[in-house]
Length: 226
Image 1 (tube, rainbow, N blue to C red):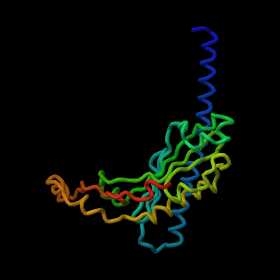
Image 2 (image 1 turned 90 degrees about the vertical axis):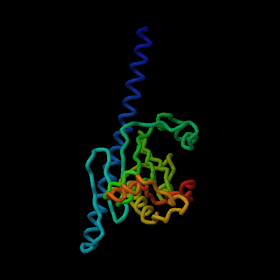
Image 3 (image 1 turned 30 degrees about the vertical axis):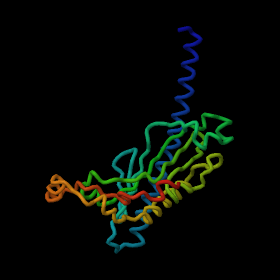
Image 4 (image 1 turned 60 degrees about the vertical axis):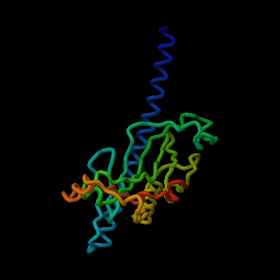
């Protein structure tokens, strides 16, 4: 390998690594902001409804994840440890903002999942959660959100949206609002009419192998419409 080629590779490694570090740092700052807003939400509920029997909790056991439990819902936030590049066919890749500098398409990712509180409390490992939104943040602190209904409709202009305290607070509030309106529906009879002997024994032993989720067996509009 020639000295020139070696120098080029080292330069590329340094440049790209510094870019990814900057992107991840921006995403981690936003993650900490969301975490803080989650704590404020829990504190606000307990202050405003001190006598409520509704459980509202903030749980932060890991540096790259936390969850908020409120009533029958859990919002689970995950900071991904890697940096991603948008697919060339993604809509953001057609924007003048990205065309001016392709490095702007590299983003950190925060994922938001909705689970049932009972799934965790009763160790129902077969139960399903739903990805309701993903927050992407780039080197300029610009952000893009894809997701369900309220979550996916938060000022999705990657060219101009800059992540800040107000944006992260609005994201959290929209996610909570979405889950409060996202109800557990009775699953179709045909999906639930059979269980196995194994299932019966597990249920009898106070274990629940039968899968539960908010839209089990349904194809619902929010799955196709962002």
